[in-house]
Length: 291
Length: 168
Image (cartoon, rainbow over all chains, first blue to last red; front, side):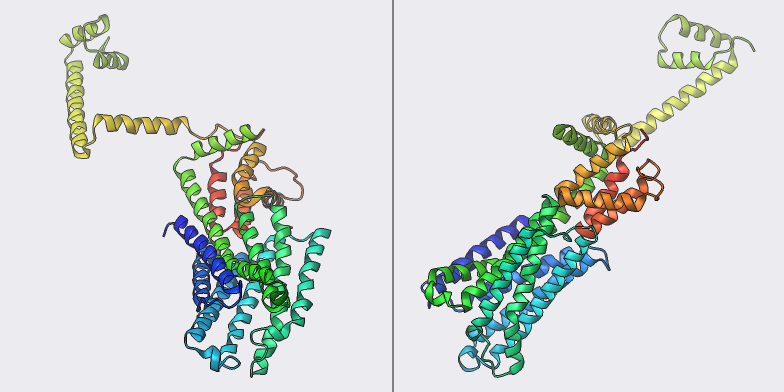
């Protein structure tokens, strides 16, 4: 499948998810059945496919390969979670078994977040080996503090969380942990932001930008869905939820950009194999042009 | 035997067998020299054989004159675009930096080049040389590979080894 078609599909999914959830939320109550869950499943299926391609580009045993492998696992658990939620809604379990069977969704949710966090830490470790992402500035600490503010804010609204009233204590504990489990990847987004700034541009920086937006918007969406904002400022809540729904597509977009980097590098290598002289002359021209 | 036909005379004669002072001398000599006449006979039979074989090959390959011209044109272009006669180590490093910056950014390019340089030089040396270039390229390729993947690492290796590095 040509990569530009994949990009078009991801952009379409991004727009469709945002519009659908905005329609459901403002004013609250419009039915979209479980189409949003189908869209999320598709987004994570794309993410899984792209993560597998990217991890295959990294040598066995490398930290970056581990990072993309954990992200692939995170995608798998997210697919399981959204497929399960779609089934629950389609089968009407949300009426009769909301606090029992349906609440089991917390298991894949937590596993996906743990894998995502592990992947982000591995990614950070790869750059730390180069001395990048290890020196922070005041603005980074400010961002981290801002993110941490969300955690008690969400924990206070714990009662509004979808599985806070599960019949099973384990599920209730897992649900209570979700603000922290979302905040840790968001804190790692601050680290990625620092690395991105130290990169000073390039294709890889675009990958990081998309990952950062993905991580932060999810936290914003969770805040919008469980706090008092939903009642007092329905427009803001709808906007937050729509952003969160669209944000899911930023993850496969980031993986796509990363895969495009591999494709471009392979193409350039082929050009160097067939005519290295011409390619070097072009590079030299760029040098003299930039001088 | 004396005043036999020299190699240079043969070449001139075979290239332009028309009437001129040199070729006339060859003809006159062959009229009285059986051995040189036999040499000419064998040379001409060899030339005919080569022409026949060349024609057969051409027919088998079925390549037109215009295609041959295009092929030659491409070969010439490739020869003209051959790698620079030699880059200094500093210039070569700069070229590699230009290659990897669009992929991973200026900062990452600087960090990977710095790491590869440190790994490639013994503690007693400060600057890369043409001798340490190969190990530098291998280390840079590994560093790029760890961040941007094996494809980017291969690109660095391919480009790095395409650069003819010389001292100075």
